[in-house]
Structures are given as structure tokens and as C-alpha cells.
Image (cartoon, rainbow, N blue to C red; front, side):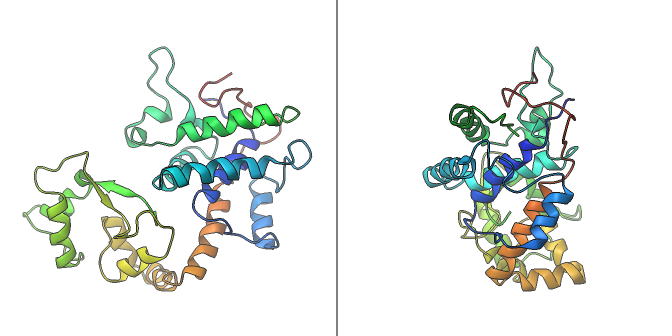
Length: 270
């Protein structure tokens, strides 16, 4: 599968960061500069060829999130799923062609991903307004679906039991939301009562054994992870670490120079 070059992550990373918080990493954060360089990326890469690029991405992203509060989580999920399969190359954007269903977009875990239209609009706007630039397309919020937590609620060890690491009162609440047989269309907030807000309430709930997924509960079984969970109850601590981790993840597997290709249309290989 062909990949695209460095600019793809520059743009998409802006989308994901701007979708959840306006100021995550300060401009003078030397650690972030180092992370970007190590990932093959460069801050203000389009500074000369498209001076308004960041403000354009910001404007479109924020307008979409204002219109649909769930869009922030959708864009974050899109970012994660792209970066953890052979790196951040936006290959998840590629549509199946001529009956070929082997694209990342068509993989079972990715079929419920949304937000592609936001990337399309940003790409089209940048091409129109930045004609000199060759522009690439490249869980504290959100929901899960009832079938994904059914075993934890109804048959955790195979004996018709509920996961004991889950708060009993919260488990009863989840069972009301997800009765048997579970409906794939029914969703559950990953961050109880705060799934549309970018905050640190997830970590507060986790300490109360109110993490929805088994992987949430697992964080408390590791001393280091448990200590991080405790520290991330402080929103300022969490948002700083989140920003740095997102920037670092955005540099995974980035192609630069003559590697890969710059797709003219995000959804189609040239």
C-alpha cells in the first residue's frame, strides 16, 4: 500500500489537536519541538507557502465540533486508528476501489469510524486557498457500543457473572442501558456524564471503578499506570501530557522526502 509524505501528519495532527482543546502544548515547549523533529516533522512547515494554513484548519475543525459535539471524539479515533497501522500516513482515508476491500477503511474495527468528510473539506479549502503549496491530506471523550461490554456485564468468567472490578451500582446502570440481547446500535459513554467534554473526569470515574471497558480497569492493576491515573485527575497535568503524547504519536512512521506520494485526493491513490 502506498503512503503519503510528511505534510499529511502536519495537517491531520492539527485537526486532532484542535478538535479537543485550543491550547494543549505551548509554543515554547522545547520537548515538543524535539518530538516533532524526531518524527520527521517540522513546526510551521507551511509557514511560507501557506501562511494561513493553521488558522484555516482551526476554523473548519472548530466549526464542525460546534455543530456536532461528538465530532471531536470521532476525529481522535480516526487519528488513533490511522497511526497504529504502519504509522501516520492517512492510509485509512483511502476508499476501496474496483471491489478491493482490503483497505484499512474497510477493516472491521474501522467500519464505524467517522469524520472523513471533515478531512475532505479541509483538504479542498487548503488547495483552493494555498495554490502555491502542495498540501497533503493526510478517549476522554466518545462512546462505545453495548456488544463490546456485554461479556464484562453478563459472562465475565464464563459463569454468568459480572466483572468484580466494576462498581456494582454502575454495573447495574450499564445493564439497564445494555440489556440482553445487546443492541449493536446502542452506545455507552466512555466518560460517564462527560462524554462530550474534554476534561479529566474519566480519571475520577476510573478511580471509582467506573471505567466502562476492561482495558480501563486494567490501568488500576499496574502501579505506574495507577499513579498516572491519580495524577491525571488534575486537568492541567492531564492536558499537558495529552498534548505531548498526541504530537509524539503523530510522528509514528512518517514518510519524508521522496518516500511515498502526495495524494491529490485524500481518498484515492494517485
